[in-house]
Image 1 (cartoon, helix red, strand yellow):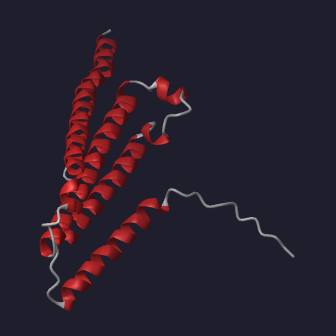
Image 2 (cartoon, one colour):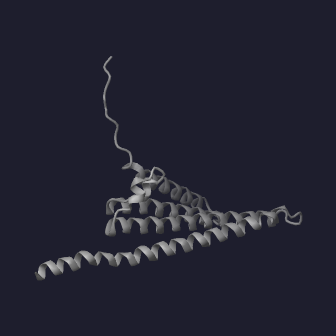
Image 3 (cartoon, one colour):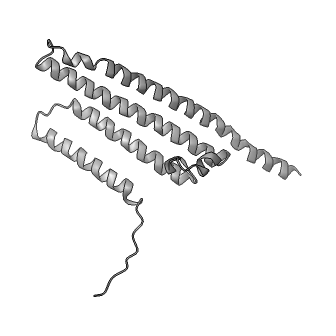
Length: 182
């Protein structure tokens, strides 16, 4: 009797995860809002690029600043996506399957999570994309003073390529190797 009560309590305790689900979802909405406001502000200032008084180095600085803002917006949307995937994944893993997502033709398979490994894999890929965007953001402001600086930058790009390759290496199942004999 005591064991049955305790096991019931343990099973129902999984509902504490709903706090993380709701908090992640609300935080994701907040980050979507922030990124969208940033995007709107960027779009409203695009007319400043046409200013005839803006020339030479001032135009280049303005352009670099706007490109950096675009990168920040992308970073914000990627972070919001991580929070959304995390929220949906936690819900599916600990609370219940999302029946509407399972039966929907329009739902993305990336949002349907059946195991902790799937959740980790999807989150890792989005976090990798955030890191790539951050690298690009820092690259916009890099000053190359020596050939070693350029070499280090190239090494960073090569490592990003390797990370992308490795992150997708397990995605593709090997095709059936049927050999034709002629």
